[in-house]
Image (tube, rainbow over all chains, first blue to last red; front, side, top):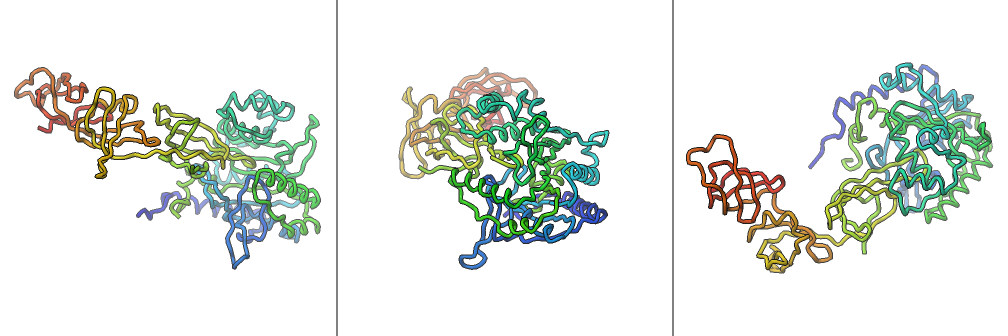
Length: 319
Length: 189
């Protein structure tokens, strides 16, 4: 019977040091550590996130959180000020080289910051936790989603037609007969073709509005609606995802409904919307930026690991 | 027919892809920050041995292939088919054609046990054990006393395979051979 841990004990020591360093980082900046429930009565509506559920009492189902976002926004609406959390998040059917169904997330919110200021703070955290991964100049590059696609694939993700995007996907991957929506195609190109090329740390900004999730939407210089969303990539791996947070409860309710519409069309269960979050937004969420960072992946980068199991005490199969 | 979803794809699982039975070698889960996840899957086509790489949307499924790996002993060849018999006491016999026997042909010895892969009840491949012991039927005469020095010569085995052997090996010797590399290991008797 295999009982030994997956991670080497030295890696677990490194992991503990990184946890302490993250806590020091936020303590120095007066960001409050919080804990929110892992078992929740509501969950996100994102059609591509599948929450696990457990029966707390007969008929009383709770979702294991896929991220602490909603509860943390309720704290922000209650006037918490800047907050961060290190917690477990759970996602069904996510298992692989960089995924484990339960994983550790570092999520934080900065009232009064915009996305650009939060990007600076993520870069500062990287300098603290992963000094060796930064470029010699110390500055992490930023590139728009549009320019990234132009440089890597010579295609404009905003102006190209669906047919042109699909043809591009077929040239670069093996998805001959797959039925793909426009966003599926963009995600395919991003995940399979572009992401592996992003070896040097880089912040990707100005995502298509259709991929805004919970970010505010603005017009870019070309007049395209873009999301105030950013992602950090390091060593060909997505490490963090942040937003200038949506604060408008009506728009939030509209996006929940649109997600559920998409869920229905795809034959997925419709999720009850989080009425408590909507009530909190109605009360008023301060203008803020927030970001979620995969802590296990941060440890992977620090340890030079290629599989997430190398940084987990016990991976799902060994739990 | 049973189907398997991408999250159930594990090495060794047998599925149908483009109508051919395949064995999954590797399954990599790839997910962008938000949005559709994908699985990049490596499969070996069990009919021709070729390795395929395919991308699937996570959650897509493939039909299970009715593939069974069964221990069988080799009986004889009638020139067109090579006949095997289950070792489970059922005495059930299966004729394997040349395409199924393929490279295992070099290592067939009557009564030895092989892994025969059945697809829909028909043999599609034959895997020899890692090591076989087969008699030499043809080679140059052995050099007496030369048991340690280097140098090698070809020897033809009863199965038809030609392997490089040390100079001291004689006709009638039984040799242990690694079927994965075709290399001589030692003289058994």
